[in-house]
Amino acid sequence: MFRSAVLLAVLPFLIPPGFSQTFLVAPLENRSRNSNLDWIGESIAESVRAALLSSDLAVLSREERESGIKRLSLKPGAPLSFASLIKLTENLEAAFLVHGYFEFTPSPAAPPSPLPGDSAALETADDPLLTLPAAPRGQLRIDVRIYDRKHVLQTTEVVERGPIEDLAMLETLVSYRVVHFLVKDFQLSREEFERRHPPLKLTAKEYYIRGLMASSKEARHRYFAQAVRLEPSFAQPCFYLGRMQWDMDNYRVAAGWLERISPDQEHYWDAQFFLGLSRYQSANFEAALEAFRRLAARHPLPEVVNNLGAVELALDLPDALTHFKAALAKDPSDPDYHFNVAYALWRRGDFAAAAQGFRAVLDRVNDDQDAILLLGRSLKESGPRQGELRLEGLERLKEEIPK
Image 1 (cartoon, rainbow, N blue to C red):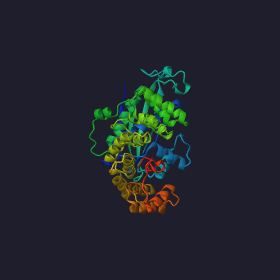
Image 2 (tube, rainbow, N blue to C red):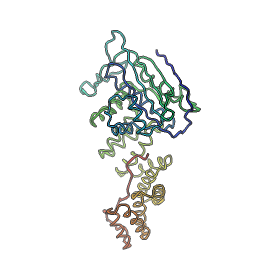
Image 3 (cartoon, rainbow, N blue to C red):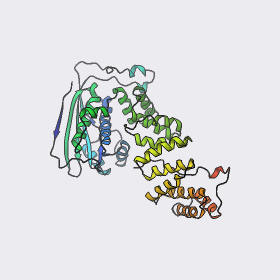
Image 4 (cartoon, helix red, strand yellow):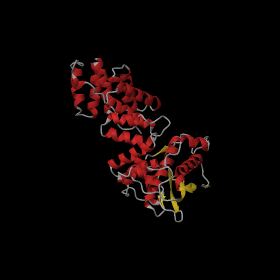
């Protein structure tokens, strides 16, 4: 079916578990003459990136990579030369660059046709956007390399070959060999690695990748939704669909997508963050509490601890002030954390301490209208009044995924 080879250069180190230096994974260059296969380079990069993340290595997100491309005034989606990739690696302060290319050799006299078991083109014939180009038959050669910026050398080359219909398996093999080479004392067998990274239907992966590469929100949504229709447990498009619904303030729909992601899948913890926010905005506070408690137990970052406190305050739980103070202790410069501490104190009737907190907010944001109003109420020792809706639910949440 396919054969593989791993060509190694002398490497001065292997990456220990938990190594903090960052990897940039670039789309593989398409060296075939078929531009319809451009998505394969991005697909391989996504598979390698996910494998590195699952091995607790620090990997830049695709969004961070695209942001770096814009800062360098490089054309989005255009092939990047090795020199441009090095510039991008330096700009993003990554220690290692994972890059490479793939080649496609068509089978002689083999007409394009849907891949075995894939009927997406027929099922979506009423939607031209979702009708994929017919897949050609032939052989792929995938060549992935790792560049060490500090030592200015290519540390390894991983090569896999096989039929294009075996792309999912080829991606898994490439990812396994890259991680096995990089991570010291890597214990997973190839069989266990494959179990943790099961292959997807090729059309589902293609829809997902084309969604990532699409230029419009509408196209991204349709591609992602089609990917999930073909692979209902596909975590990545579920996450992006949830994020898109969150951005459109469709909180209940967003929660429905995000809660489909299981703990062993990519984006799980990021999904828990937005799931908690979506449930909070839907007034499903008990479910929001569950999401943020789970997240805080694993990642007690100030944004997470603050949001946990906000949900607890909405439920009138006593731990809210404790968590607000914990977030403030982690980042005393943030005015929102000062506000939440002061707001919780004001609701408890601790007016002197609340006034001090609202002054701290105004020292940082001098026109914060809620802080001005509540400082005045604190100085008058005037607490919450029944039916005073204007001063209910003022706790502040963080809505950006913490780095």
